[in-house]
Amino acid sequence: MNTCTQKLLGVSFGLLALGTTQAADTLAPQQIADLWMSKTMVGKTAEGEPLTVRFNTDGSAEIHVGKLQDTGHWRLSDTGYCLTWTHLRGGKERCLTAQRDGESYQTFIDGKLSAQFRPE
Image (tube, rainbow, N blue to C red; front, side, top):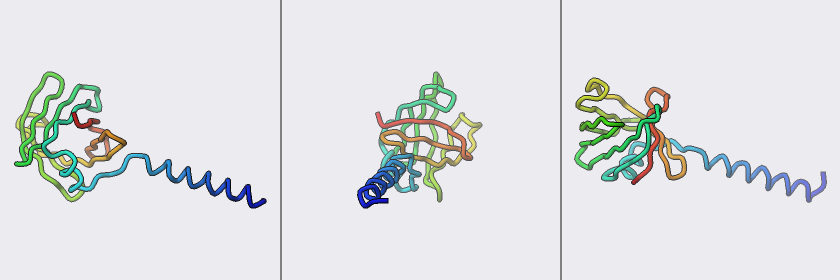
């Protein structure tokens, strides 16, 4: 293999490596707070229902899913964040992880996609 071919292969592998860093990145709990707090997020649930959610600085949260509305509380966890809605999910706390994919975010419960949204 000549030097020119080796350089081209090196550049190609370098570009491939850069491309993989563009994929979804898991967010640390503090990143979630920094990126989402006091912002309204819009998107859809894994089932395709329209979604609007807001995470307030006092730990309160608001959600609109399809035609349903609810309020509740959120907190950071060791691996992401947890939500407790007044009515949704029977009022039980559920903890989620989050990934950033460009300008959008994906949330997961037990490894399954829960929602995808972006800041409004």
